[in-house]
Amino acid sequence: MKRTYWNSFIFAIPLLTIATVSFGDDDEEGFFKFFKRKPGIAPVTSQLYKEECGSCHFAYQPGWLPEQSWRDMMSRLDDHFGDNAELNPVNQKQVLEYLVSNSADKSDYRRSKKMMRSIGSSAAPQRITETGYFKHEHDEIPSRLIAENDKVASLSHCNACHQDADQGTFSEGNIEIPGHGKWDD
Image 1 (cartoon, rainbow, N blue to C red):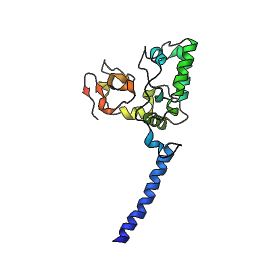
Image 2: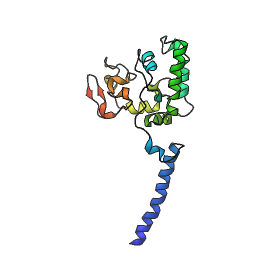
Image 3: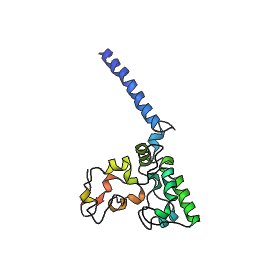
Image 4: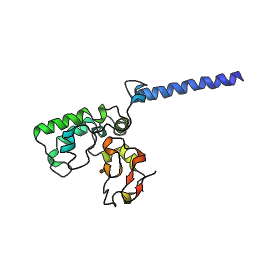
């Protein structure tokens, strides 16, 4: 009987080691950093960003995209997805600094880390909705509830369904699709 017990114990040790390595590889600062990560994504804290960008669309949290994405986007505000969103130079510099310093590749929030894993370290997507992480999280939602729903219209309107989008939590328990009700996948 003891021999069986020790065999089981010996086989369990490598499994723990493998799990530790995979957690450790997830973050260069070590294994325990994984457990200290904050859930969700950092909420928007810049009033200037909320006013300038949030006046036209949902003020996306900077932690959704890496630094290079924000730099590229802010360098082409004269053609911002078909609109002219140019800012005065002082405000543009301040908004860019805020976005860059809070970008996904600099964040300790779980969703930012997941986003970075889904796009890779060298990618610079311009649309959050085109990333692997975003597509995976929204793949079960029928288009009739989004594109055919005039109260939502597009997956880019995060706050249309995510009741806690402004706080950066995006919890599945707080999804309410207008005209449909509570979402339960």
